[in-house]
Length: 391
Image 1: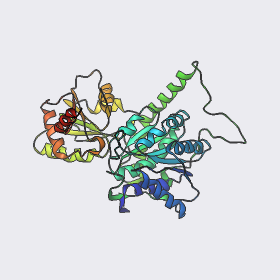
Image 2: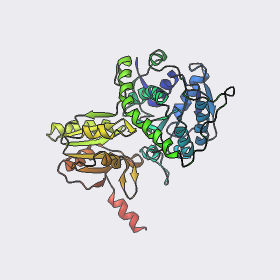
Image 3: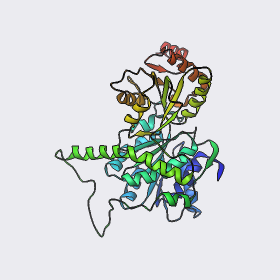
Image 4: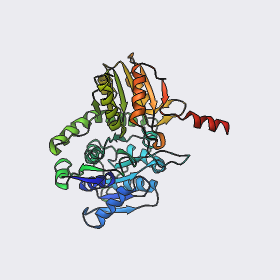
């Protein structure tokens, strides 16, 4: 049944329907409402058999999740921004150990300067940690992705981040169909770990590996990520059959058989679609290609989807200083060997609104091939001149 609900609460209820046995919690905006809601569900008995662990830091949250998962418990946590950075060492350990932890990242800018608003710099900073990364366009997508993330994580024996834009989605109230325990039970089987720490059958996991085998260990991780490229759409199709609405996919095309195609991820896709509708009505051939899976990166699928485009615009909400947008670099790799012109547009850093008017003007310029290779959308040159004057 569809109900008007805050995104964080919808996600919490979807996670609860997956019946985790351990939830590790440390508050940091804008994800706090998720773990707060889960604590209430545990306390009131809506989520039975779950240990809700209040920890002293984000590093501790991931460490507890690692311990729980290693002993065979379905484990979940959530974080954002500096909290994700604080658990960076443990993130690599979770992935290296092949532990199927699911974590929500409520995307938020990184400091300094301190900024609590949305962009993708936090999750992008950990893109090579070995976690699968899925990005939600809407609160319905974010809610459904968590159910599918547990299935994907446990099937692949890899941890999964579900990334949803902080405040834009986490604190927005909109109609969401929250999956029930019964629905989830028909899609998500009981967790059967590939490895399990048990005092009655002692083993060692995560032992030191020397130069003679470390490359092979990393290769196996790489190969598992590549295997996930086929499982993501397959599990999404199974979800769609069981729940009656779209499941996860690698890519989300929208009028993408156009001359100019914009590649983007997250909630900005909704604004882009509205902008594209207006442009197409004016006779400008523009489409959108959304990325649901960012890690593993669906390079071959993206290249195939962009084969007919005359130009590609990558809308980035994370910046690699001195280089440009983060996602643009992956798109460049996917398009290597093609002659398709590619423009990089950095937008919405630190929560700056990305409006239809700005996107409309930018895409019209792109259609004329009048964009710089790297463009900062709505860059305030007066502010820059003032800063230079005080430098």
